[in-house]
Amino acid sequence: MVRSMAEKSRILIVDDEEVVLDSCTQILEGSGHLIQTAPDGATGLRLVDEFQPDLVFVDLKMPGMPGMEVLEKVNTVDSTIVIVVITGFATVGSAVEAMKKGAYDFLPKPFTPDEFRLITRRSLERRKLILETIALRREKEMLREHFAHIVSHELKAPLGAVQQNLFALEFELADTLNEGQKDKVNRLKVRIEEMLNLINSWLRVISVDINKLKENFARISVVIPISKALESVKPLATRKNIDIAVSISDSLSPIHGDELSLSEAFVNILGNAIKYSHDGSKITLAVVENHNAILISVKDTGIGISPDDLPHIFEGFYRGKDVQNTAAGHGIGLAVSRQIIEAHEGSIAVESQAGKGSTFVIRLPALKPEGDPELEIEPARMARS
Amino acid sequence: MKAKIMIIDDDPDFVAGIRAILEKADYEVNVAYNPKDGFQVLQSKSYDLLLLDIMMGRGAEGVALARKIRKDPRLKEMPVLIITGIREQIAFLFPGQAVHPNFVDVDELVEKPIEPNLLLEKVSTLLKESEAKKLQPQ
Image: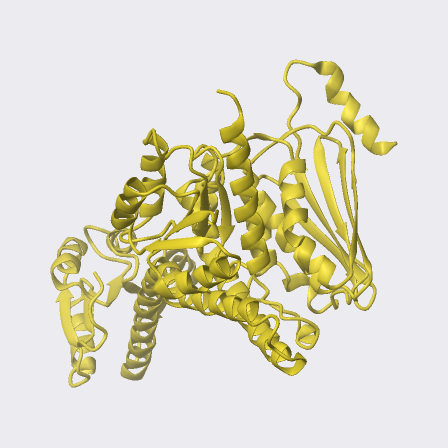
């Protein structure tokens, strides 16, 4: 049960020694906490239900239900309750076992009032953190759900309308605008386009539900999403005068996947290659089949990725430190691509050298052709030739 | 004779940007700002092409309208160009494939915002295809 954090903290002490219960209650008197005590495990568990404590002290050595069992049961009822075990023998062994079973800390008897106060304070802080984490996690889920809606309605649609009118204005005034005016219109268009691209990548991250993706897998040729992706990045490449050399092996095995999301992944990777390439350079896209896998490699001779950045590029919202001036990256595309590819039981890897360029290799499992054993060997042999 | 184009989209600002381009290219343009009015207009007058938005009203009402058009014996031959700002979401509304296949025979999908040249190219291609189809003996 999660209560408001502003409320008084509730502490339950379970111990068969009355003197321990009394002294603990006394020590915490005036601390502003609500305290209840139980002389045995069964009463303690009942109070956990009724009292809903933030923190439970439980003696390990009690007649009746042993402390370890109380610990386990409290943990099952509500794992957010912080539990500290009191151990009479100061045996490290039982304390360790209790902590393995979910206790936050242990308090060896005999203890001083200060020790008890300190451990109480630390444990309540722990509880507060746990509750805050839960609240944040819930908030994050809510945000995720509403964010896509807000972003697409409140940001993307108006921005799209602005851009559309700008297009219209430029089109209508094509013969009227002078070079300086055309340049200004162009600046407007480019900046809005960048914003729209950013919004689109946010939406992609939020809405890619990997599990749903798998429901729609079908037997497809990988060439289709690749061709779609090439089509989609063509204008970008043309603008930077970049040549994309494509080589695709004949008779590739089909794969089990979703055309739309795969083409999204290829667009991201090709788009990146273009974005981080120098004007007038060349990108090589090769598709081969090797050992029951389709390998798609995208090689550029662009700015490359520094060794510092390399381990993080698939993490999402990560963007290399050195690229700010080069192009407007937003670091989400690769994370989404990786999610999509992993949903296809595939993998993505990168090799890169700063200043020399990068090669991304996507590996997707190839489906064996149905009922034709001859063909199973054929594509692999071709790939090697 | 000018080709007649109908736009059904609930965003008047966006429509203004599309309409200006089409009118400058010498098309005759009419607009409805919701699917209900749009369908009425389509039934009362004949159009050569429909530009249709997907996300209108409470959800993907454009899809429902497109299906209705496809079932209508008089309207089903009219080409439909879907213009939408929701490429990503579409993948999840209609998982597996883009929304347009099997909609109406000769439809196409483009994303908002759309550059004038691309818009005009799509429009003229769809009009030509539809014209060619009409001339074919049944």
